[in-house]
Image (tube, rainbow, N blue to C red; front, side, top):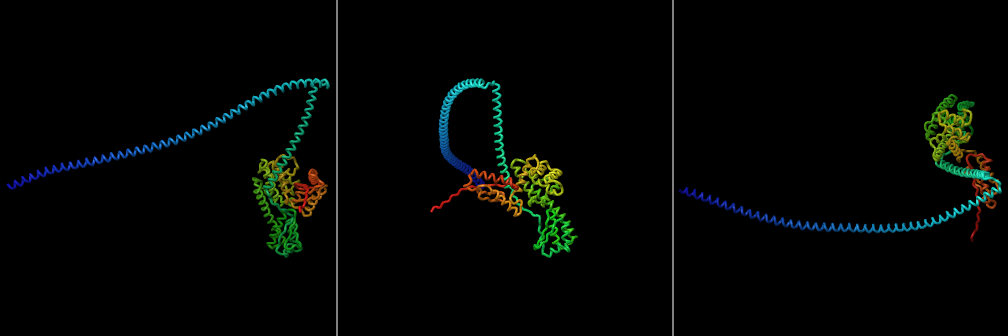
Length: 520
């Protein structure tokens, strides 16, 4: 029974616990719901506050944006107003200018109307005068017919004949006038072209002689060169074709000969003999023969260098060899190869100045004296020999004609011949190009000065620039400006008639009156 009581109490306790648990659960659920409602309310309040703040911020931003937009609009409006005012001012200025132009046009129209009225009056007056002149001419014509007894056709023929004669005279005068003007212009232009070419190409000049000197280590070598009873020197002169001069001059032996190639071969062979020390006829013949072969190589080398320097292409090998021979040829002591190169450059520069082919002109100038390399092998002058050689080796007609006519021996058919002739004269007459003896130089200077002093009114005369220029001092009391000009012309004509000279001689007459007083 106690057990039953215990079980019943336990059941009661369980029921009570369950009831209490249910109440507790419901209470806790109510508490949780209250807390959730409170939290939800707080969240709503907070959201409402944030929404209110966001709305206020949005209103502020919209107001600021509206203010900025209003300011920007006002600025644009101000700019637009300023541009409008500027355009308005510009239009006002244009309107003023248009009004001024319109006023000027109105003035010009009034002037044109006045001019037209005056012109109409002048035309009317002219017509009236023409009518009067026609009447007078008719009257004069009738009077002339009556007085001369000529018909109208006869008078017309005579008048036309007179007009023809007058026109022929006027045509001749105009032709002479234009010829003089053309000659003056051509002379001035040619002088400028020549001076430009000479200034652009400044060549060095070396006057060569007909002798060569060979240094020897001692005077004992002179006896070895002569040999026993002169056999060595005779063998050497026979093999080389030159003269060997051995005198009392210490340390040198002179080789003399008019053929530069032979003289150079002899000089080189003699140097080799002196260096070798074995001097006898057999050795002389061997070295001379060897030197001749070397000389041919030197000649070819000099020809190739000249062709390369003058920039002339596709030249026949034989012509190149002949050019090399010109290296050992002189004309009035001027080296012919250097002279040919200078003529080539001068002719090329002048051709380019006047619009011709400078390359062809250089070719003509380089080959114009090629006949001098073979003039001892053929008959005739070097222009004819050179033209035949150039024609034989395939050169063009301009080159052949330049070689044939550069000394004005034939009619000029090509302009390059004139250029080569001018360049040849410039190269030959350049001061220092051709050397002359001191006695001949002094004599030529004295002739120039004495001819000038022979004219009345000349006090002193001085030859300068190696005889290329003469300065004449005229007496100021005995001459005038006009007479001084005549004296200058007469002196130049006297030089042309009495002297022979290359190039030109410039005559300058100076006339001066100088008064000096001392202030004390």
